[in-house]
Image 1 (cartoon, helix red, strand yellow):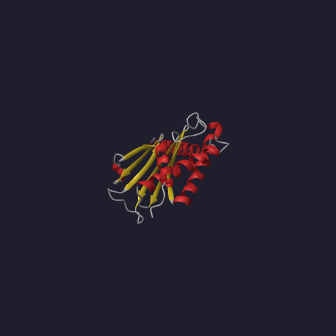
Image 2: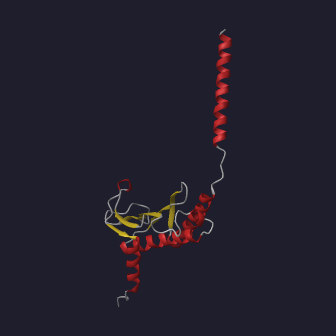
Image 3: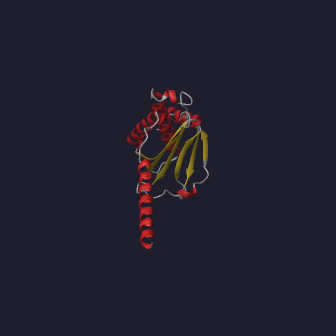
Length: 189
């Protein structure tokens, strides 16, 4: 009788182990990506490569809102440079405009976009900034520049887990206009 119970317990354990391994093997089966995600990922990857090459920013996260259609796409970068407000504005406008150009020129993605053309309302870009030695910037330096739903925010200081309120908030269009004005100013002799 004791021997039969041991045998049954061993058999139960083996069956449980087999069932568990079957569950894991089924979960490891990769489903092909839906077309909208595949094409969105193409645009995301292309934007990350260009922004890295041109501005030395490193992608640390991506995302999007794609339940029925592609309504938003997001990129998060980190950079190792201490910059002022004008440089931060130029950087965020460059990143948003580059991302939008890539998204809107991807003809395979266009049918899946919630609205075409995509605008600054449809993309989110966050850029975390560190010193060149990869240390956190001081409390009086720009540590985060973010564009979300058509608004650009500039944040001072760290620590990262305690992101401050933005010291400046402006629309993406205002940021573009201010950059255009800066470029029109004659150089100071």
